Length: 241
Ligand SMILES: [Zn+2]
Image (cartoon, rainbow, N blue to C red; front, side, top):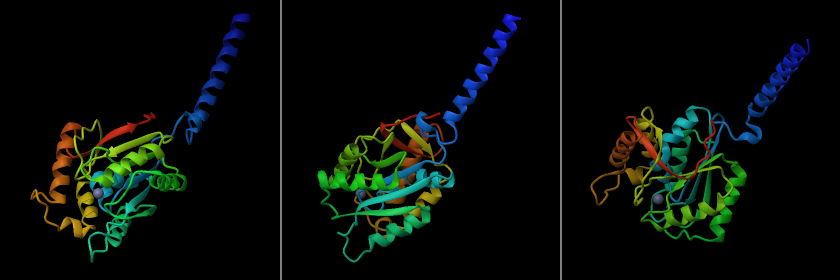
């Protein structure tokens, strides 16, 4: 009789523990971490077109899966006289279905690592509360990309997941994290084409933007064991199963 009572009590206790545990994990994760669903993603780029080039397929996939995507572009790309790169960027944001496009307001080619840039990024983090940040890589030939990556590393010190993406001028980029964009490569190219001033430009290598994103997607697809992928290098990545 005593044994039966003991086992019955044990059974009730186990049920209570399981119920408590499931409440902790559902629906928003509470203090056990952010679930993969309903994520808030902030993608940052030094210039108009950086985000679309580096992680456009991932963002299209994220929007399709119901995540909220915010964009922040730190400079207006204004060195191209007579070209409205802000309108091009807004068209790309609309194509994506971004929740908001935030402008940093810094001058093109003169983005400087320091307090002002860190403050601007922190303001955007406060505004968007992202679970995941995607940003230019620190190893890059363009000084604006390097400045943004450096200040984002500081500003994002409490963000659980921060991934660097591969831009046109990235150097020594060795991704170990991949997102399958097989179903989104064509849409990515359409979104990138919103930046007509950049897509239709002649590049010294002879390889234009659309050709190069296709080549990268195939290479990173091969590395990521799928057909087409985007590659990322994590500063930090909380794997929340
Ligand atoms: Zn750029």
